[in-house]
Image (tube, rainbow, N blue to C red):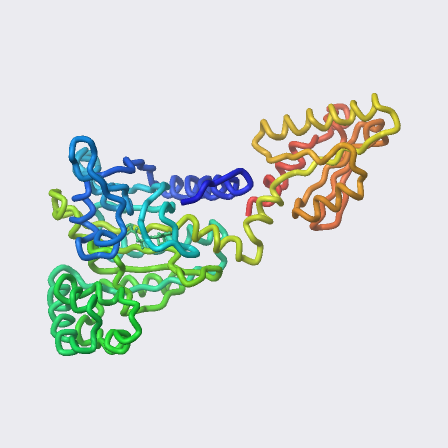
Length: 428
Ligand code: HAM
């Protein structure tokens, strides 16, 4: 579990802002549910035999001897809330997005935290290839909007409720025939939930798992084919991976995962899919749904590895002020006061503005700005003060502009308009 400190938190805030802009503009509403839920919610939805429920939950008994769990994911919580509050009586379908902490007691390693965060969406009570396609398009478009240049999407079809039964039986028969080649855990999984065999990392089980004849056991459905045709027609790149079964039990139909460059062994950046059977399992009516979650920390790793890393983008957005020292103390003070006034004004208008050290020389300021990747340096020294103008250096274009202090007589635009025209200095 990590503290998120200043220096790092700016990246979180930047992504959170992007999440809100993107999903709200597509008609999604935010939902926040409690971090604690009854343990039963997850055992009934994510599944008793899943790694999450069988090994990874932070569960305890509270003072009233109720079994409580720190949520390991949010899809089940959203379903619980929709059923409990009768939200579908007000609207035929619902669209939610969320950002928040989740907890899984996994063995810690790079990219795997015990408290981690997810950005997610749930499309509630919508069936068919249209909703499947929309969910996938939203994942692809959001990742690009956040700055992931090339998301890699993998999809699979787990079959609808009736074909799924046949597929599970087929898989059971197949693995039963190979039981002597399976590890102890997989033999247990075969009893409990055959799909969990695909989570196995044991070397000796891999040839048996690889040899599953998916096309015979579970041919791709016409809905899945329609879904992939739509992806193709929208130029969304994807690959079909028949072994992709997901680590949670509630999925039916289309499932998918996303990855991207910049992740190590834990390369799942996002995952999701259709889950049409979850609501009845939790005491609700038949409610076809689809959704996904993105790992926040993993998204940050990916964004740091992009051609323009997030750090550079954030630095580019900040306007660096370089007040120069003068021969007289009074003038130095006047320069500082003017600069601070401009910084305050820009900040109040939503810009990120920072003050360079007042004693430094121009060369030091420029070196500093260069080092941290700040694109714009606003310079004020004695001669600028005398002429009542700012020098603005664009470090990227290697250009310099002169902007008068706000002066209606000269029809001057002032600093704010200058930066507004530059869209807050590169907001992607
Ligand atoms: P999930 O695949 O279990 O799906 O998790 C989604 C993402 O959360 C993963 O792809 C990964 O990026 C991140 N993640 C998971 N565990 C950790 C961890 N220990 N440390 C860091 N990041 C982690 C779900 O949770 C489903 N609720 C997704 C969904 C929504 N399906 C339908 N709607």
